[in-house]
Length: 464
Ligand code: SAH
Image (cartoon, rainbow, N blue to C red; front, side, top):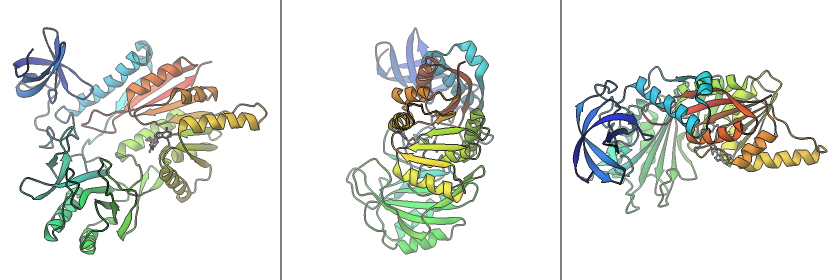
């Protein structure tokens, strides 16, 4: 294969980034936007010895899994959705296969066992407009017009779009209000390359249960000129609860600044997952798909199988979301999280829900838990600390082995592993299976339709 060569290829598989995979005489081609079952014409862009990358030029025969028309016309250009052109049923199949494949290959879990313990993936009834949070970059186009939208894949060029198919519908009204205010009052958009201009990003959050709206403008400066005019206009939008700005004057990819200044209303919105109430500030971490999050936490609860007498640890607890769910059915819950602000939120959330049996620690899970374990032994004349259930919900890199070791040492009856990356889940499952635990239930939950991401909950039980 040579660069710029045009080839016809049958797409036989889906890669980890959602791309189509085809083979020509044993040579593997990765083709973005091609879908399993398509026959396509593609142009080779990069040719390595045994594999290459090609650009989709023409769909000769569309796959039966291809949707007639993607809901969003920008789907292909935008870096947000990778598989919107694949029908939703096939997306779910792809995600379920990915989890199973990782558990088999990386986790070395026998297929017969997986067939017994894996439950069907939980998808969404309506997989659009599910996100409660969006961060829109603000910039200018070639003509100098102020635009907003999303970054194209792997770049920072803005694809103008105020009507994202994953976000809530009110985003558009808010963005149009901000853009026309900026034009009218000559407020500049931020230019990343020159590190000049004022408005960098707009963060919008929406409480699905309470219908409360939050807008936070991220600015490269100290204040927004005529900010009172903007706040007046935005506050007229139904549901508006919180208007703030955040200063970020650094040349950085980090979106938010550290401080939040109030422009109108209050600095947070309130929302519910199930019967638990949460206060969310612009800087809080909060799951972005509330409908699926309720299912995810419900599953974690079910797997934990609490009766009311258990001591439970919730590691990587964020703002205490899972902890507070668990606390309603446990004797005691300990939450551990690395971000101090999140722990402040967790404590506050416990308070506003009247939950008194949850205690939170700031720190790395892999430090807090081992330290607790050692301290306990010293303070209790050699008696070892015990937990009935340990829940973990780590970031993509999964758990440190030292943490898994301490978890095993605490001999919990159950370990509930909530994962956003099934490859690291599989790696950690391998360790736990090698150290006295067995996989009893696994279920994937589709938190992010149209993207390649998938959440998984696994229940591991101590072997007798
Ligand atoms: N369970 C929470 C948050 C899960 S996201 C929820 O469902 O809302 C993962 C969390 O782990 C983040 O809040 C992140 O700040 C935290 N984190 C990352 N590394 C950590 C570590 N080493 N120890 C403890 N928490 C960590």
